[in-house]
Length: 168
Image 1 (tube, rainbow, N blue to C red):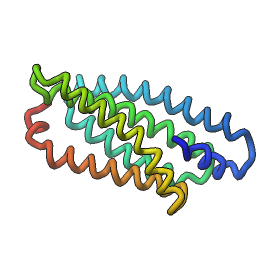
Image 2 (image 1 turned 180 degrees about the horizontal axis):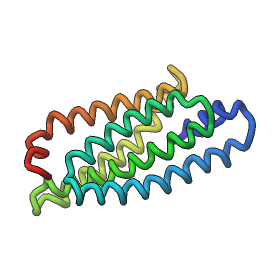
Image 3 (image 1 turned 135 degrees about the vertical axis):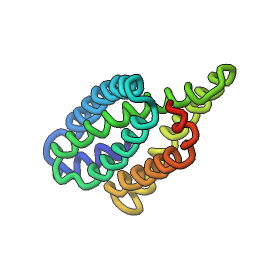
């Protein structure tokens, strides 16, 4: 999130407290992500894994694009809260998918791989995001994130059809 304060500053046109206003964005995002994790788990129990996983991933894509187009700080804060709700659900559902698709004796390895991939993303993401921002502007980082998530959504839709067809 290293570019987030710069984006907040851009949206506020230099007015206000960048640290405090960025803090509000992060706090609201954290709270709604926790709610999203709960709702993702609830949806999984009610309708299975496939639909909630695909819907939450696609919602993340759409909401990242909307974040890039945010005209004001308040609009960004609200869209970011909805995006965090979708991301929270997505993270919970990806964990459920890893558990459901792994043989019992390989669950530890599956979760280790998932954790390593998440850590790599959280480590490399800000680095790559900083380069993208310096080359093409702050808003482009949201579009890049949306494109990467869309690629993941297509993989889930196409590549895991056999898993989802099993009714999980």
